[in-house]
Length: 397
Ligand SMILES: Cc1ncc(COP(=O)(O)O)c(C=O)c1O
Image 1 (cartoon, protein in one colour):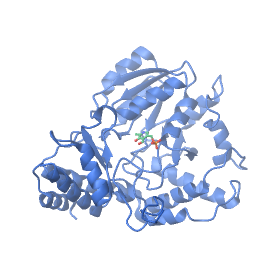
Image 2 (cartoon, rainbow, N blue to C red):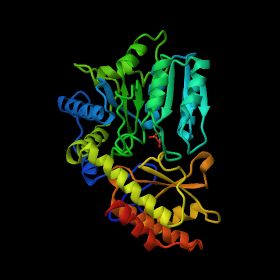
Image 3 (cartoon, protein in one colour):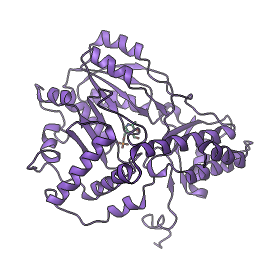
Image 4 (cartoon, rainbow, N blue to C red):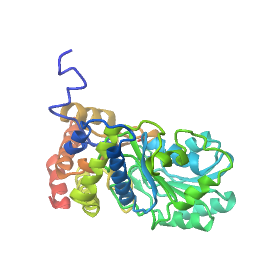
């Protein structure tokens, strides 16, 4: 095999720019961090890495929760961990579903024997708090769960009404922060979130493989009061706490040093090199620029203004355009990855992620230009120049 054909090295000199729903292109500093020598899982220096990482994750969530750490596994591991700890088989969970990942919460919970109630909103809309409240009166849930940033649609769910409903019904409030963390403020303590899970590979700017989770005191007390053991040994937070938080530590499993080095470096960039407010502003500005460019192409955003996530931009595919061909052209000619629609939105939308290190003006301009060429190739009339111009104006680049 020559080097050009070898998938491990083919991408080295001219890497694909990851502008899909995640993973996202990470900073070279983060890639370099992964090349550092391994340490034993109980080594004092590795403990320092984990301690700093836990603190920066608390900052990312906006919480003082002691039990905050990066779980081994991706966002789905975090989802499974939170659900399987907070609820026992036979207990009731109410889920606000407005996309693919809300649906996943229902599926995962049901597999752990949790009784699932759901209220559904049309994909692309937010969940209506009044409808969820009515369902809570009927179902008396032990916990209520919503997805903060629904990656399948690009809808940002306002959290405050749901935390209030959870409080009124004495339910725990669970939030999926996989896409929102590091891109918009979460303020877990102010929002009275009892447990949340996230992903490392989106706006935090690290590779996939770790899932930052956080549990409030109330959530931890609920777990301690369980009658039955947690249905997943690997995700039992009472065991995990003894490794990630307690001193002295005890062995639970062998975490990936390299992934933790990368996540810590990404968190240092976020909180120290750039600072969180500047990162949020960057995501918001690049989102505004992309939307202006998309609209100058004559395309429509899938989610209405005011409900859009800045980091995930879902764009409706116009009639007569084959979205799979668009994505293939961007990947093969421009070395840009963008995402397809998920579930019932397959074929109907494309998703452009501007997440973490990848949320930058050069990427906005490049993807708009590439999109215009791909559309033109399919006889859709548009001007790439006008799109880039609109983006530059809206982003004040
Ligand atoms: C909102 C949301 N929840 C959960 C997940 C699952 O995360 P992962 O694919 O990292 O397991 C994703 C992944 O994209 C997501 O966007």
